[in-house]
Length: 309
Ligand code: DON
Image (tube, rainbow, N blue to C red; front, side, top):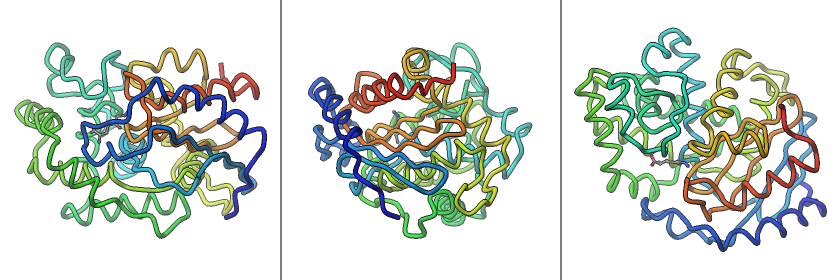
């Protein structure tokens, strides 16, 4: 689908781009360190199928933590909310995404929410399938359906790079296994999780997925209900309360839309009933969110009154 470059959006990108110098590309996953910190692009996808953009929207982004919303949606459909929320909580942590502290001090066998790494690992474990391959294929076909793009796949280099270095996620898994929250083979779970995080797409695909969440799980172009409205509602609520980790409160006040970030610099936004947003800006702030991406959303939220509050 064609996405029209938009002059006004280009102006906002130009303004927000000034903030990229204050950020830093993620380098704890070595393959992500190659990104250009000056990049900033955005696509906005409307329910009628039209789309506007600014910047190089063809650039590929790995989903990283944005994938957590999608795996949650799949698992909610696979298992139902009751099963899922017996194993992972609904409360924001106020801690960084990879923090371990509340696991030990509050609930060793039940991570506080599905957006932090501990919770996402428990969620990924719940994806149905006989083995890693089948589970990943199911997740990938769900993502392809959401984005209406059968070519979406994962970036093997990024997946391998994270798989080889992700000792912190391994330690979260071992902690959770000790406390009965994870049962299977940890290396298999890390394999699945790192592939999930390395699923790759461009801003347009991201905006296309955003619009499905914005329209309560319905693909507005085909009219198909891809996920139940209740699942989309739960996901959007987590995007508001935990989507930006320990910056979610400030984000809700300044921008006020459901959104999910990833350390690759991607942000997926879902403006309820209105449109989906895909942003790529790999320079991150100290909390792991795209620094210029957030600035851009702030400018757009003010201008177009996007806040739901
Ligand atoms: O598990 C990790 O650390 C990464 N694969 C994903 C973290 C992430 O994207 C946090 N988001 N801002």
